[in-house]
Amino acid sequence: MNQKATIRVFIADDHAIVREGLKQILADSPDIIVAGESENGLDAIKLFRKSKCHVMLLDISMPDKSGIDVLKQVKKEHPDMAVLMLSMHREDQYAIRSLKAGAAGYLTKQSAPKELVTAIRQVASGQKYVSAALAQELAAQVGEDHAVALHDTLSDREYQTLTMIASGKTVSVIAEELSLSVKTISEYRARLLVKMKLKNSAELTHYAIKNQLIE
Image 1 (cartoon, rainbow, N blue to C red):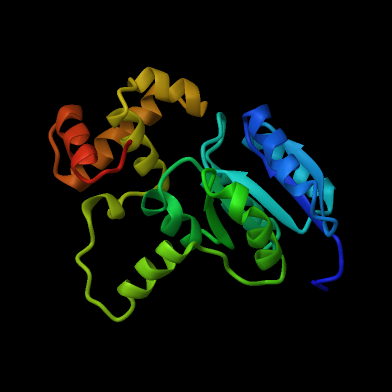
Image 2 (image 1 turned 120 degrees about the horizontal axis):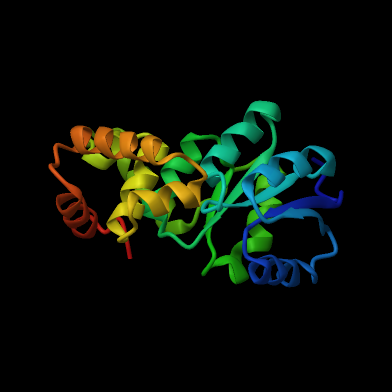
């Protein structure tokens, strides 16, 4: 898009205080306006269709539909749309998964005050945005024969289930938070245990802590 044109931004985050904070950060940038917002994944998809925005700021942890699922749906409908993922999670947990799913960039909420405006302008111009630390990590992988970590073999939903179980949440709580059935979450748990060659939730939690997949 023309760099002089106004960048219309849509914010999808389930915390009102975060949305307000992001809007305050963007308020001093005359070339950026917030043209829409939502507090859950399903509304994000519906409202974004009508917003005529250029960039979506998307929280990776949504109450009803994971941010990566929303990302995939948005990219399916609008392949050229720039989606900038926002997360409380460290980059090494979700950034690469997000980029592989079609995100234009990944930004932690801790770094948003300093990097948000630059990130939005960059992805709006058709470029990718990642932090210097993540760029180094990605560069280090180029041309190297890395052994694939067991958790990297999981689907996005299986990985999400892993981190939630390791955080101490029960299958019932996870099902409720993700708006899925207990049976479905139990199937995700069973599959990820097989893929990771683990026997139970205790071993899963130990693995997650050892590999710094949870805080």
